[in-house]
Length: 242
Image: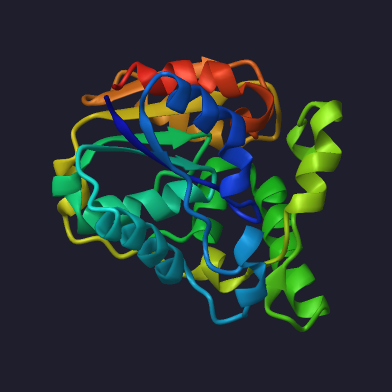
């Protein structure tokens, strides 16, 4: 049986993997869905000084304290930044990496710096302006969630997602990821593209890794929140790595 650690994206929490985790557990696998500091059930810890480093340590802590090995580590969206940092620090514990409609950074990249590389300039500028404008307007140093409708989440699920997503520190998007070479030791990688919404920065990464050594690219016809709209189909893709 496999061990999965499912890492959520910006503004979400471990709650978003509820149905995917249930499907994996029903098949007999071990599943952890840690929530980052400052969001979800940890929203009471929200603060503007939370960074990408904080969230990397959150997930490293889950793996270390649960004494997990041979982990299939999945990161959604912003979670791609997080799992890259985690895998760089403990590659010996990671069996495979799954980038679920996610950013795939290199050394020195931040999420905000990746947007102009993955989207037309005017679209990237609108996203970046939205992040920074919301944080400055509220003087909280935190960005407000992007509405579920923007990501083309199924209408029946939008209210559920919107009422659970919460503000996240702008610093998490601005901090560059510093890696030391450990990430390269994880040889098995899967990129899952959510093919049912636009403008998506993740088409850039799917095209980049299509046919690349050590990578497999899969596509699912749904919104950005794959785990919400197609949880069983996502579980099936994850099980292909077990």
